[in-house]
Image (tube, rainbow, N blue to C red; front, side, top):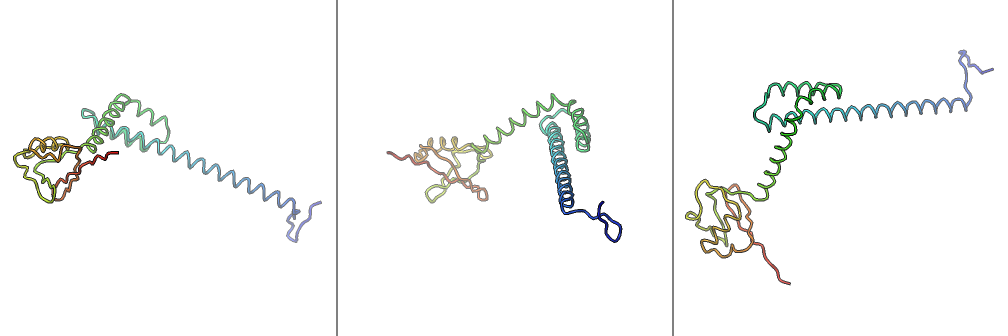
Length: 188
């Protein structure tokens, strides 16, 4: 017969209290795990939804002859969607355009990287070498853009033989000044 306190409530033994505590902790741990799982799934879904919206935004950005208003409306629908099926239904309308936009985006990134590797400098720039500015008025045309290699070739044509090796330029944009940097070759 279980013991009762003055209020008529059942008094549990020490073992029963520990067992009850373990059950409560296990239930709390399971609830926390479920909550974390739901939060993780929600975050994954939001990432998926955002990436799908970005794909449609790329269509607007990289393909010129599309109905931009319809795509923007579908982007809004994707951002409001609550299931993968709803997103996939919208996305399926644009499969071919997504592929084309992806290719154009890749090409644009390659062109941007190439521009960073081989920057062009717009004349009139000042070419500063050995503490003085070199007169380049007769070498270059106003408004024309030149790569480092084109500048090096022009300098060689005008008997600046210091430019015979590998040359890169540091561009001081505020003053539009090019400072040549010559690569030194070491023997041994």
